[in-house]
Image 1 (tube, rainbow, N blue to C red):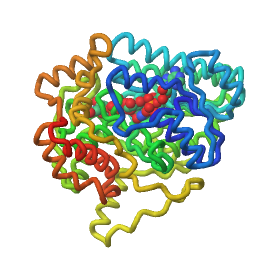
Image 2: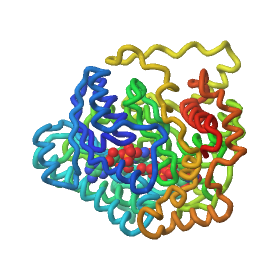
Image 3: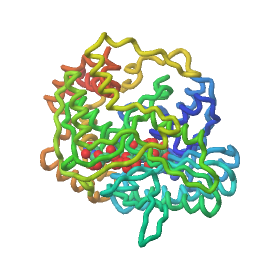
Image 4: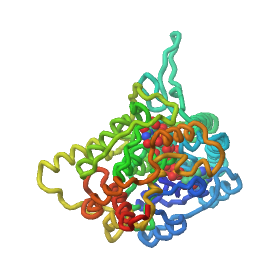
Length: 480
Ligand code: NAD
Ligand code: USQ
């Protein structure tokens, strides 16, 4: 059972597992699509309705994925779906997952914590009462740990204090009401494991990037979402879009903020590994789910270097930090357990080395044919899939890149606090609200990116996507 299976990580995971023969049910109340609608946000890649997605997957793969639309906070609904599906493993992605969203105002902070904490509490009870023995695989976050001045362990730390030693949950210092909802979840799961003998794996995931997985590029109606706005867009995904449209990369503050990152292709694999290697009854196992750590400045430098290879002039701008967080700090987090169980990560550093080697050696061979067990014929070329949105206003992309105010968050509900106020200050200090003439010219100059370079560079997928988008806008003079 994939709770949150219509979301960014959940959709890719549902297809990954279905393709490999697992019986999959998606449970989702589609609230994420509602957040986008209420805040005026939109995924860069147009996504089909969940019903169309599931139907298309059935046609493309011959595999059936069950769909149950409802809210895990609604006990009557949740108990019905547990009774009907009888899961052996419950993968729980179904939460409000944006830190900036949770800091917009009191109402959204309260929603985030009640949705996430009570939803997870219901899931714990559903397992206890209706699917005892089911393994809970719960998505937590690396942000539960904060940025302590010591190494971050995987969930637990052994401490000697006043001559006595114990292994205890690693101290938690969430940096937003969202991150704190995950901390509360972890405590509740830990208690349920001790009190009821529940088997649980808490995956403290880092920031996910990328959009393509083998299954989601198999058909336009299967494509995953790609958020690049100031609320749901995460750092690397945003930087790639910014580079492609000629918007300066928005490094918040000093840019020394360091986090763990992973490719979405590794997210789906990590979940499969956790499902295949269940925790023991009574155990709450914690895996740190990321593959590399970078500071925001390092990310910006990587995007700048990759953009340069593609002929883009990538600029970096330090903007006032809309968040309360350490901008220079020690960070060294462990992440060995998933690799010990077989994760073979897709690394940005590896891709950089490979890209450098390719330029020295012979031309790159054509991409290997899909080794996918169920998808035939092989997926079509990715650049024909990702950007079928015609003639959008470029202003919309740039407005979303600017952050919550430009994205319409304040019109949507109440006075913004913290995030919104600082974003406003940023706007007033010169943030641009629309694709400028210079950016439009740049987009025109780089419109050639849209064909034949889809595999070029580690961010090729996104550059192509955005370049095509820009090109369609430029093709209509005055549209922006
Ligand atoms: P997402 O917003 O794209 O997907 C979450 C899905 O859960 C949405 O489809 C939403 O409709 C659904 N949902 C939310 N509340 C629900 C409820 N009460 N009942 C039923 N469905 C509900 O988020 P995502 O990026 O896919 O993240 C998935 C999980 O992974 C989250 O728990 C998030 O905290 C965690 N995570 C994400 C990232 C990341 O970079 N995206 C990193 C670390 C951890
Ligand atoms: N940042 C910038 N510029 C931007 C966007 C972000 O400098 O344009 C910085 C932020 O200030 C922060 C860092 O990049 O220091 C990461 O921010 P993010 O928006 O990429 O990620 P975050 O808010 O931490 O949240 C995301 C997911 C969340 C998940 C978390 C994992 O939205 O669901 O829990 O990553 S972690 O960061 O490890 O807690």
